[in-house]
Amino acid sequence: MSAPPAVDDELDGETDGGIGGAADAGTTVPHRPQSLLLSFFGALVLDAGLPPLPSMTLLDLLADLGVTEAAARATLKRMTQRGLLTRGQVGRTAEYALTPLAEDVLREAAGRVASPTPFEHPEGEWTLLSYSVPESRRDLRHRVRARLTWAGFGGLRDGLWIAPGTVDVATVLSRSDLAEVAGLADAFAARVLPGTDVDRLVHRAWDVPAVRAAHLRFCETWGRPPAVAGSLAQLTLLGADWLELLRTDPGLPAAQLGPDWPAPASSAVYRRVFVGLEPAARAALERSLRATGRIA
Image (cartoon, rainbow, N blue to C red; front, side, top):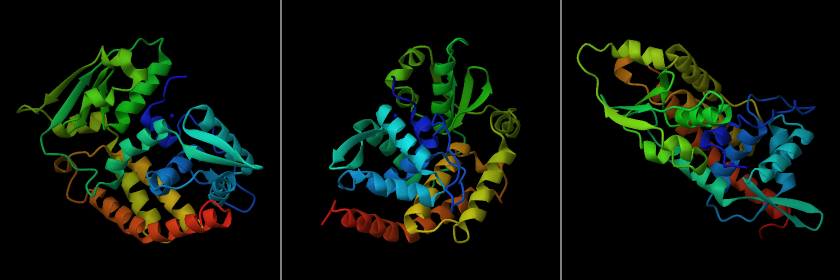
């Protein structure tokens, strides 16, 4: 997940190639197949001690989420080529496992995914980051912006970004494919001086109405039974929706957002639904592996 792609590129599937259409009997969901698979692997496979998964387990999961078989197989091939999955063969059956790179990507995301307060930061703490990337290096600019967005940064102006809280910028830019940016970046821990309009600053760096709408949409979607069948598919879709929300809201300061800011409600909904789905999803995955002889 050529140079390793940025963590958030992999988690949102932005460079995935598209979902490829709905299955005949299903409904297309607004996530690319790669995003769905990474959500599934992160929730149920990472560090679980499971053997490589037969392709049919993954194809069936994606089919339940509205992904055509052709799009699913193309995604598995692409993820293998990009170093996210390893492919093996047992008889006529292909099987897939996470690579060390993919495991690192998922572990890096896991802390915020599982945090009970992923949208909270110490009040009054900010991180400023200045960097410069030539306009001709569009690929690098995209990787940097995607990486910074996942780390909680919003753009104040070209080359100047701000994030709530204190961000470990050295770690954010530590990937080998961002080495040239790390050498051209300057980061500062900042505090707001008297007279600064923090509300205007926040609304300039982030689309606050869109962030609010994303929270409300998440709560509405997961406040009732999900529209997909099966605990495996439901947990996978929950994780993909949650990652999308985590990218959208870096943890904007509640003092600037009013007492009805919906981030706490989103966190509560995610934890409640995840705890309710996880045991059944793990059991369903074990049944699938048992049926294919992967586990006893």
